[in-house]
Length: 421
Image (cartoon, one colour):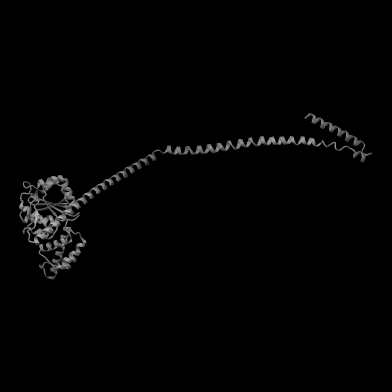
């Protein structure tokens, strides 16, 4: 820089000398003196401008670079990072922890309630599963028994058809198997004193069982006289048992006309001392499939000839009774005679109505039985108890009508009596 600075000062001195000479001779020589003056000499004057320009440029460029770069980095970067990261972490973390720690018991109670409900639901589901399994097993057993019964009924129908053909061809009388000996014996006819059983002898599906049981009891008086009456589910067959009891007394098969009727569930609870007054009569047990086996064993022992000497008549649904005897083989020998009312159909019910009306001393024409056939549509074919009760009302209605007409004692059933009953 020194050589440049010396040149600059040297030129400056020359210029000052020139300007001083011009001031002295201005008045005398203004024109010519001014023109020859070497004006190109000040051309190097722009050089100081070159020096003045770069200096401020360097200072202006360096100062903003140093001030602009560090300050925004320090303020923008650290402050927002600390505020954005620290504040949400402090607020978000402690609050859920304090709530979870402050009330730990409430969620525990909810969990215990949920587990209790789940246990109860599991228990209910397991109970339902067991019930369904038991129901399926029972349905299977019922189906098997029903199939077995159908096969037996078909065989019985075939035998009956064969006997009918033999009778028509004059090849001999009807023969059946004696339930005591297993021998083939003549079926025979119902004894005249078995008055109350005659209405059942008109029913094709039931008559053989009734006649065979009575005649076999007469042939084997020393064997148990106990009877099983098989009906449909929910159908009453107690009246059939009563008719057997009355017929037994009429035929002198029992010594007393006393009849006691009791449901299986009631029998399970009572003491057998209450049956002491039944001596020599008949005990009818309803829904016998529900009786406790040990209780029935007690009843059988109590009914022996050297104790109270009464006949036990079981009535109930065929499947429940069949299952009962399958599970209690030791009792089977005490019940030799079976009467199947479950096989009765509409035609058999009308035959029963004819026999019952005649048994009671009444008469009825064909239109009456046509009307009874229509009435049967409102009840179950095979529900003997309900049907016989209905016939009793019909005959009472006939008596009331005849009394109002002044014709009491005729005992004639009319169609209007059936409709009004």
